[in-house]
Length: 225
Image 1 (cartoon, one colour):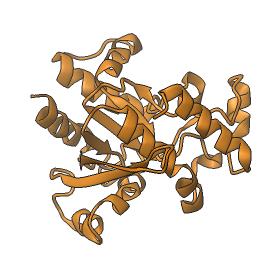
Image 2 (cartoon, helix red, strand yellow):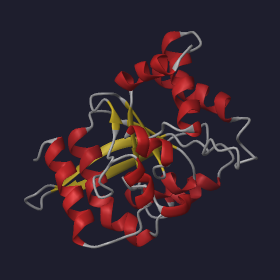
Image 3 (tube, rainbow, N blue to C red):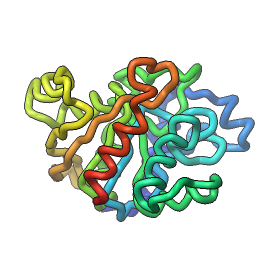
């Protein structure tokens, strides 16, 4: 199996193989190659992964997932639970990266912050599978929003993810899945993981935005206590 740098190189090669929508001006303003993926941030040896939809402008500028407004809410919540105090600076928030992996359904920023099509997600899915099965050492994934949760539907029994998400307790209960990935020899590997869904922490998500910090704290307390 390849090391993580080889995986990133494979994503880059796939992005160059055939064009797809990328918000190229944001990358160019940051002095970055738009085809170079921002695959993950944080620690591959951590027990917890946050899995979001895709990158925003702030994430591209610093080359880290979950760095913008939504990401700050996540990092602040992590800091409170891990260190039992309030963060006082962005430097404080960087301290949580040792304890978590951050990634997205597609390691690129879409134009206009619109979700990537299913075709684009399918194209990059094998690389995310390899990241989570071969390179990440943890077992629990907090998904942020509907798109991130639905990405994992194929790894649950047929219909199980949709039924789970219809439940009123979807943001407090867990869904076990079996993630699969193929290695470079075509051999299929499996890893049992647990999904802990949360709503996306966007101000546009009026139903859950105010509740998000409490829901996040409940999830994190159950993991780190």
